[in-house]
Amino acid sequence: MKTECYIVRDLLPSYIDRLCSEETSRYIERHIDTCEQCAEHLHQMREEFDVHEEPDIQARIEQKKPFQKVAHYIDVQKSFMTFLRRSLWISIIVTVGFLIHSLIMFIDLNDDRQEAQAIEEQKGSILEDTLEVLETQKEPDEAALQSVFQKYNGELQYLAVFSNDDVEDFSLLRDGKTEPYPIELPRLQKGPTTIYPINYAQAALVVGKNGKITESIIPNDYDIGTIAMANDQWIVQFEYQDSYLETIEKAHQTKYYGPSTWTVFQLPLVLFIVTAFIFGNWLIQKRNSKPVENILD
Image 1 (cartoon, one colour):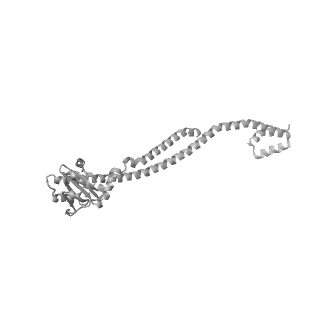
Image 2 (cartoon, rainbow, N blue to C red):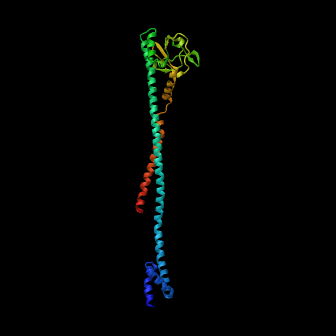
Image 3 (cartoon, rainbow, N blue to C red):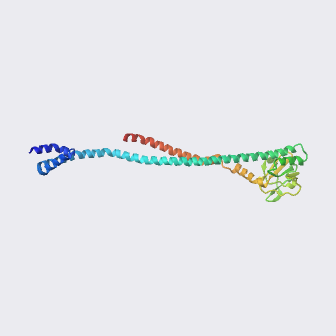
């Protein structure tokens, strides 16, 4: 074997690993082209390297598989975390929006409740003021009754006083017709009561804007607009003006059919629970994925 062959064979490992310079590689390749023994030796060396490298490569691939699965899991987790984060922000915005809307509704409802309460108190004040001026009188005094009417002139249409000595003979106006109807005196004595109008023809005294009314009165058939109360001697009845009936209706609807505080804040509360649930899931997912991310890092 020539000396040149020894030199080339010493260089073959570096040549196979591509560590030789370009000039040395060309030198080796020229020699291999002319030397069958060195070419065969190169072929055998390459086969040996491939045999040794394949298990290493396969082992590395097998080692990477679990990490590839973990990486895939982390990618899925990141996508799910992104979904949760976006859902959380959307839920927060929607919740805050509905909360603001509910707060506005609650403020308006609270104003309506206060107005309804003021109207209820006004009903009692009108009737109590009237009964108070009648307390020492055997017959209702027009001037005293007119003074009460003027105090609430902006709301009242009629203010009437009835004697309850013959209460069984009283009649109410129902469906536009006057018909006998027993007055529930104990109920009227408890406080202001909404009733169908008692027939004004049986009143001891009726006053209006211009004083005592002597002509026949056609009561308003709006039952919520007629209020009465009684003591041991008198029954007092008043009607609201037509222009004030809308306010009375609104107060009535607020008192008996208005939404509760729970109803107003029900939807924001449900949305808050949903938001808290999403936030909790986001925290759990973040806590569970962090150790794996640290391992990969």
